[in-house]
Image (cartoon, rainbow, N blue to C red):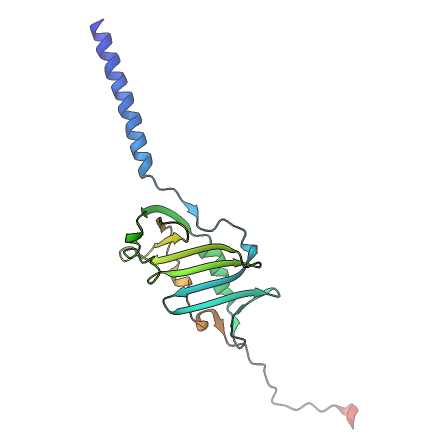
Length: 188
């Protein structure tokens, strides 16, 4: 009877240690989720700002344009990268909940790259601050507007968030001019 009681106590302790270990490990697991989970079709404006540089992209009449610039056309590959790469980025491991550490992760107001997604009714659909990792060039940091939490992203996307007009736009192609003059016989 004494052996059975000791065996039962050992089993209870082992099972308890097993569940305690699983609980402790679960707190350290990273889970991924998209940074933007809304409808991309609702996005009508994209504002990108880094320090004093900023650019606003606008969607109207089935095409994107650079606000305040009517001489450049938007590079389609940049818009595709924005929607297919940047907005499908996942936040994974939480690295901090302390706003005092935002500077360390380059997601404070002065160092971060700010991205705002605006709807047709001027509603903010998403607001993110991205920062470069100084140790891991294949990932970035991100925080959302209303949250103190900073996450590591699953890939590096900050190079898709330029703030210059030349990054987003290009000169329209010039029409070809023919070297020969066509003579219309109907006019003679």
